[in-house]
Length: 406
Image (cartoon, rainbow, N blue to C red; front, side, top):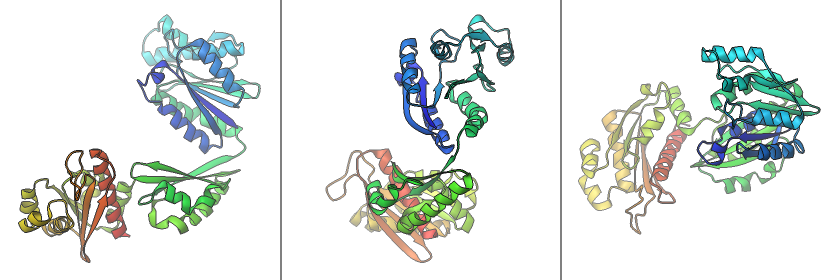
């Protein structure tokens, strides 16, 4: 079955709100074996909406429209679909009563508009708002109308539309998300080019800030069969890219790293300069981290590095704050001060100003001190965006800690 998503609302075209509904629906439809080849955004205009629906009906078996089910005159979705299909509208008393109950008052004529339904439609109760959803079966085509607000749309789809569609689909699609760090999309393509040409399961890379995601998707008659196909493909991917894969279940690096620290009961403390506590803050997103995260010291000034971490004045004078030597002494200092198992340090030039030919913006040093000794890493991060450099530095530090735990 091929599906198409149509988001209705002038506010989407103007950029006043982000169309998160399409992202949610695309992923959900993919998971139940429905292909989505087109997404359209159209304003609150009857003629243009009709044109978009006619086009979608010519190439898709399933249309899902979001938005335009409200009480105002520019909410035209339901009326336009009914007119296009030649369906009369009628007042659905139960919907009227539910709207009155939700609003806790006798509804106005404008709200009453939401209780009018095309004849023959399946009505979807809205537990989070006033606009009921609608499913219209028109020959071999299915048209689903959902409210626009995500807090209404998502639960209505998950609880009512998805079970309906699952019964219509002859197969299921199951996806697994692998997260990789330390390798770019092009290099991944070089290593698994043949796997990316596979038809079932499919393998697709997606570049994100500071990492790459691999989506492995199998189509089969059952979830078990699809999962088995995915497992075989992932085994082959692990052989080729295993050193870069840190998650097989779409879990972010900071959470994976934090969970590993907790699981192994390995304590950590951080000394941060350019990242100003961001490393510790990302670890702290995981519940239970207080059992292993001892402390984080933000030492921007050289005097602070000397005072709180014991970095030698001569080291700072000779090599500078952004140097391998300073990163090493920062990591040693925080480990000794905190008595943690791991001391991690980050010092660098986040920009956008400053930097020299020898020490450009994006130069970052990371130190890690453990019972086995202290290592340092030099990073040359691209660009002059301050926040991007800081986040990239944190991701690299997390990766270094994670690999040390492995």
